Image (cartoon, rainbow, N blue to C red):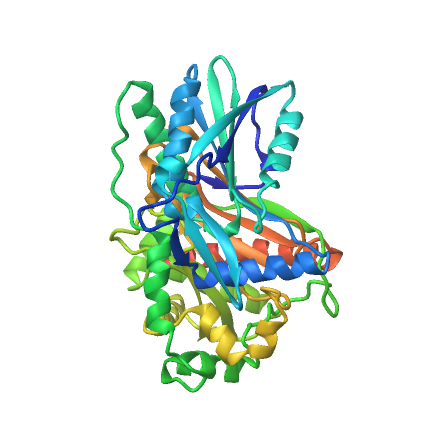
Amino acid sequence: MLQVAIEDVRIDPGDVYEWNLVSPGMRSSPGGGPTRRIAGYNQAKHFTVAQHAQSVNDPISSYVAGTFELPGPVDLDALEAALLHLVRRHEVLRAVYRPLVGDLSCDVLEPDELALKRVEVGRLGTESEVRAHLHETFTRVDTLSWPLIVMGAVVRAESTTVFFSCDHLVTDGLSTPIAINDIATAYEAFRVGREPELPDTGSYLEFSREQRRRNRAMHADDERLDHWREFIDRSGSFFPRFPLELGVGSGGLHPPVNETEVLLTDRQVEELDAACRAAGGRLFMGLLAAVAVALRDEGGPEVYRGLMPINERGRGPYAEAMGWFINTMPIEFPVARGTGFAELLADVGRAYATVQAHVDVHFVKAWRLLAPVEYSTIRYWPYAVNFFSYLDFRRTPGADHHEEWQPRMHVWVSRCNGILFWLYRNDSGLHVNSIYVDTPEARRTKAGLVGRLGRTMEDFLRSASV
């Protein structure tokens, strides 16, 4: 699995088909209509941001898309059945979202209310035409319009590239490999006349309802917010600022740069993983420590303060569910010069244990209660924010087939005001996908930081082997 801009992917030319999701009948359910749900915290804030941007004629487009390969001649009817199976399987994809005053609800369509309409787009004769068409197709998803997924395929005699794009409203990064596994597994079943054998999956919207129930009575003085309050007191704001210069001045949004680079080979990341475990930690702790040290050595502070996403799926009924199962938590730890590798890992481990003790408080709820002025300014990120993310794609559904499917995730945003790093591991090593403002200062800062990050990890390996 690669996380990479669609512009950097080689996809051979072919005949393009698309499938549009429709609901022909809107048949009433036994309760008198579609099932009503209250959307998740992330969804409500995301929808409100999109509404505001539209109202001031300043929209920001984005998508989370996936592409993968099916070898051999394709069975278009089986592929169509597999794509329909995906949207019927995941409740979050068959919901129609409606604004409430200060919130968001949705009407969930029954699986048999959905159908797909196949469209033959025509032949695209060059790789560049294919990439341009896919990017244009991916951008058709719109937070404020249903459906929130587009799907299609580039068909050749010897293979097919399947593609889809979702709005962030209904997906997170881990949803992409889940969707790829669902489609590819269902396709192989339908192709030979079988029903797909996929595990039962819970509903993100049901998960969100329970999450809201736990947070409903929370107020600004609630002791459950103490972790956030203490973090704000030390950092000076709800959002920890990215500590290096990006050349964005007083703010504003800029076109982004989207780059993916290799940080470590598979052998090197195995060695770093082993070193982290030998020191009593885990690989992601070593990576976070390396980011903190690299920031410090590039001119940042000797205390790391940042936000990190926490996957809330767990290993139960939501493990293979699509949705926005992400909480965002603050984390901080010292990175004083001269600190050894084992001590750094211990500091990160203690900081992460503190995070885990407070994950029941949702980021959006804390934001609304503790930073109401920033919350009311609508934008997700008011300035360049310090952010760390790590995914191990070898542990996602369908990972045993990644060599065959060649899965890729494509994250895109039309404009931004900072820098985001997604570190991820696959069978070939450790990579970083960066999206950052296109300014001369940001290009220099990003290049220096990524170079320093690689050297820091190599230093960790040398110190761990002594």
